Length: 167
Image (cartoon, rainbow, N blue to C red):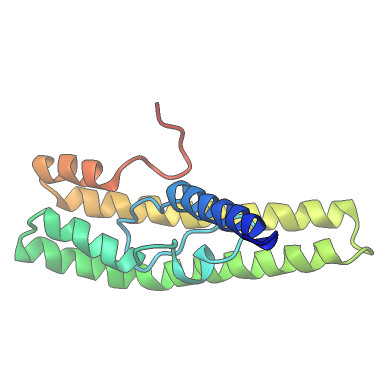
């Protein structure tokens, strides 16, 4: 056995260990019951442009609604809500992306003052708050269409609310 064999074995063992560790510690996205709505991710890629990593939000939302056994009338009204709110959600998403781009640009510009950065940060948070308010309005409108049994199941299928600590 030559001198490089033990080194190769050690390297392969470490690599395998890292791969196993990464596999078991990867993040999974929480369910998203609202099709077509992006999730903002503070200065990180992915969510604002296309939803959470993993299952597409449209798929998850459709699956949740399917599991509620909606009547034809409920489905029709939910589709109307979706169409009604689509433009607002798109505008909110765009506002977040624009505010985020401005903030990133300002952070990379040494001439930007602290006051300007705080103003841009406040604009970004305002855009995020407007998105959250729109989502809540949409969720409440859907909830109002459901029977008490469907509401309970809807809540269970959603899982814990994103951004809130669960015990």
